[in-house]
Image 1 (cartoon, rainbow, N blue to C red):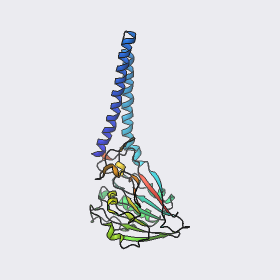
Image 2 (spheres, rainbow, N blue to C red):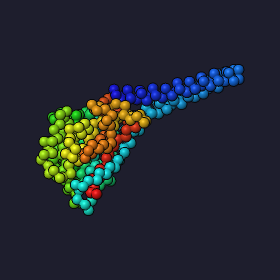
Image 3 (cartoon, rainbow, N blue to C red):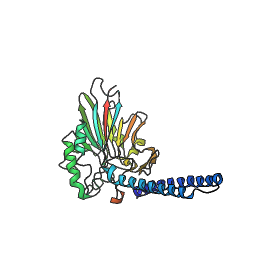
Image 4 (cartoon, one colour):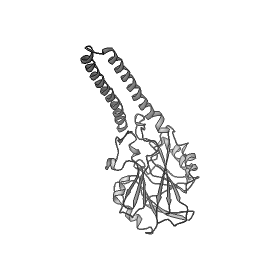
Length: 311
């Protein structure tokens, strides 16, 4: 419903342009009356008709783009985080994050993702939740996860769409689900701890952090970005989240029309810094809701490549 509403806003904005142009034509008509003693009616009508046709075509093009182009147009985003906790001289530790796959009965980017991610040469891959929209897509999801685990060690946490524990999401995929757990990762002399919590309205990251060496670089996987408010500065170095889809539909200069978080546009997409803690909100791959809501506008599906590097 939110996506349909947002696309409606796009169309309404386009129609508003028509009325603005119509107002300009009316002013032109009035000025022509006083200057020449007669209105330039025919010319104004032609301009007005051309404006209506142009804006209508533009509106239809935006809707077509949102449904058929952008959902399949993947973007790779690169982020670099410099930290004193990484030993000098070591090569950066490269994490690749994906989120909110929302696999459905239609395959979109699931076959493209392994090749794109493999090209980034990650040391580890993380998935921050929301696997499938329907159990019918479980096969598609597990095939993708199996492919990713062959590229690099792959870790996942559950999102709010993954609460049905009777569905085996990660069995026989090679993916390690982090359920109130942590793992120690090392590559090229760099090392970090990866912590994971399933989606919950009242997460307790502090209990997990206490089990990890204080001086270690700590990455928390948690689906909801508002967990940032529950983390003390420096307690976690980097939080990787999803959930917002970047709004899924955005407007130029304004951003997301609707965000499913209590903090709204305070946590929308991309990189945030609070004290000594970084948060990255991935825009996700898939879309929620019915086929009518399966659209993206100015929020392309995203793969995030994060290099954690020493000074």
